[in-house]
Image 1 (tube, rainbow, N blue to C red):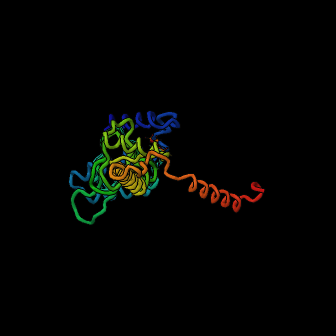
Image 2 (tube, helix red, strand yellow):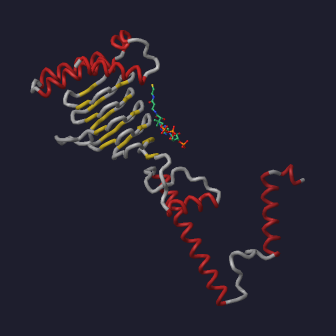
Length: 268
Ligand SMILES: CC(C)(COP(=O)(O)OP(=O)(O)OC[C@H]1O[C@@H](n2cnc3c(N)ncnc32)[C@H](O)[C@@H]1OP(=O)(O)O)[C@@H](O)C(=O)NCCC(=O)NCCS
């Protein structure tokens, strides 16, 4: 137990530049107080002294503002920075070297008994105010951005941000379809952000589908134009000038009219 406490204090020094000395950490860090009380409460819980375990965790909540159910399993070098408002549910499992900031909830989405809270693998960092809800896994070294709401599994080494959370994986090799979609988007002047198959932002997903459709329709148009030009040699292919000189004159006149209406001083 003492060895574990020493490790927990070392974790504070490693992850909080504001920490100055052991006495200060032991006396002023609610994350450490909650952790010490949780380790005792969890021991009582596993020895079937459930009432005393709940009492101790309630006192810990009162004293630190951090609510950890005594049934939750917590690994080595766990650090809760600031702490206020953290809630960790009964069936949550936390690996080694995990960091949580204030306002984090590791919660459930069902009233059924059994595993209903998330599992955080080693090295996970969860930003302030993030909510991770459900019995899924947040993979090794994943990061959850502050205020993100995560309701599905997060792969290892991935960053989840936003509500609902979308996943950012840096330097991930892209597949051929994704590359061609990205090249096309750039060729028409659209800067796609995270328009990948694995992202979960509904707006970006909508854009991805639209780009897909535009690309598909353009391919069809080009094929049709080519076929028509075979049937009728006078038919202009798309690569040729699509407007006659007469049509271009009309377009130019309309453009001038619009400009005159929006900016009268310039055209006089
Ligand atoms: C998510 C986080 C860990 C950064 O991870 P990262 O992998 O380094 O991500 P980046 O900073 O490269 O950002 C990647 C993208 O996500 C966006 N992003 C980052 N954090 C975000 C958040 N919390 N919510 C929404 N979007 C976020 C960035 O703007 C960026 O978007 P862009 O590509 O359009 O510019 C960090 O932003 C964060 O939220 N940390 C928590 C810190 C905290 O809670 N501190 C409290 C101290 S008291």
